[in-house]
Structure formats: C-alpha cells, structure tokens
Length: 313
Image (cartoon, rainbow, N blue to C red; front, side, top):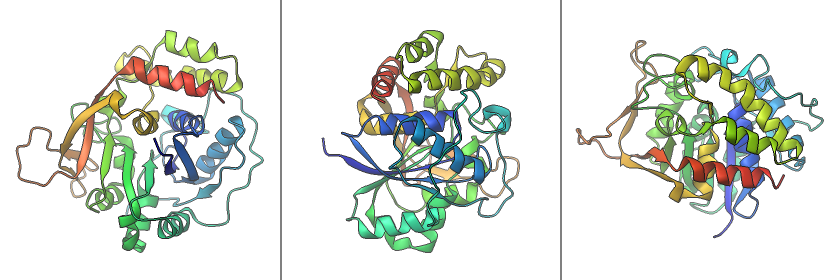
C-alpha cells in the first residue's frame, strides 16, 4: 500500500483531536502534508491552538498548522461549546502550544499544495465546516483535478440532525460551502452521523486507551470522558461517538466500512431545513450519484485499529 498524501482540515474538537492522532500514528500509510484550521466547534483562534496542542501531544512539531477562514461564506458563525467545552478541547490538562501558526493562509496552502502535486494524488480530509475547502475550490477551480478524493465527516440521513432537527453540525455551519464541495465533481466519501453514532467509546474501550500507558492514551481517555457527557444526556448512548476519526480509519482500513454511492444535495434555501444533506439513499430520483455515503462500520475493528495506532505515539 502506497503512502497517501492528505491534508486534514479541522476545527478541534475532541473527536477532531483523535482523528489527527490516528493519522499521526499511521505514518506508513498516510503522510500529513499539513493541518488547516477553520472556525467551527470553537472560533478560529482556539481551533488553531488546539491543533497545535494535539501535534505537540503526539511529539510531531514538524507538522505545519495553518489558520483559515474565521466565518462561513454567507452566514454568521455557529459554534459548539455546549458539546466541546469553552476551549473546544476540554477534558485533559494539556500545556499551551509552543509551535507557531504558519504565516500562509490555510486556503492559500491548500491551493498551492494541490497545484504542485500531480493529478489525483492528494486526499482532503475535512472534519469541520467546509469553508476552507470550498473557498479554495472557488478561488482556483483547476485544483479540483488534483484531488484524489474528499473524505469528510458531515451530514446524516437516518439520524437526521444534531444541531437542528434536520441538519448535522459541520454541514449546518456552512451549508453554502458544503454545496460547493458536493457539486464540484470531486470524488467524495461521506461519514455521516448514521455511521459515526456507531463508533461509541464504551467504558471498556476507554479503559483500553488509559491502559496504553502513554500520554496520548491518557489524554484521549480524558477527552472522551468529557465529551461523552453530552451524548449520554442527549441520546442515552453508552459512550461518546468518535465522529471524525472515522474519516482517517476509512483511509487506513476501508473494509471496516460499508455504504452506497448515491446523490447528496445540500439544502441552502429553507431556514427550517438549512444544511440538510438530502440523500437519495433509496434511489428514488434520477439525480446522478456524487458521493459514497457510509452507513455502517465494524466498530470493534475500528477501535482495535485506533487503540493500536494511539499506542505508537
């Protein structure tokens, strides 16, 4: 298996942090060209802070972190401190980062990187609102051909919404950006709530993180200890769903996941259903399929992979 070049676009977020750690623990399979940050779970200054803290936790100060868009394309910013805490990374007591944010804007980094790489060679892994990716595609549409695929966390069909009755948070924050990406023609793999809600950190799985005996395992256990309180109260679930790591796990072990290649459209007109991922799961329209929409995963295999890779850090 060749090493896949990836850019992680993120708004950390405890589950974003675990996704970054999973990628950094898998250098034989993925090369992280850079981490681009966007406003989402918390404002941009905190997402860039948190991304650097996670890199330093993994002792990967060589990873370059870029600050991107601080607001959605056409709407005011909606954040999720009620889920992730006031810092976005509440739970572990991590030191303030000493790494510097790169001078280049995240969108410029995405454009420049895609321009210099060969056609179809860079995978984009957006695990927050799609503002940076859409802005890059709008500003330099020729870069789309150099994208191997976009593997994103966002949307829902059977699980409907988690921030409104109809929409998932990442898509709802910037639905116009999501519409740009989904209509770009780039190959897309979607990790919606339908699958991520099956990636639950049970007590036994969190104990396995703690038992690793390294700083990363302890920090991840503390992140999910904090994160799970919201989902336990809201859904009555047995633990915290690790939404964002599903994207990286798919790159490493696609056989853990199953879904359908279907049409996905983004609602941008109705305030009632703004940001809804209108998914033709049953093939009832003649709209052309534009995304592999994942519906299920092998949860035990997912957590085995995650635990093994966190142990490496």
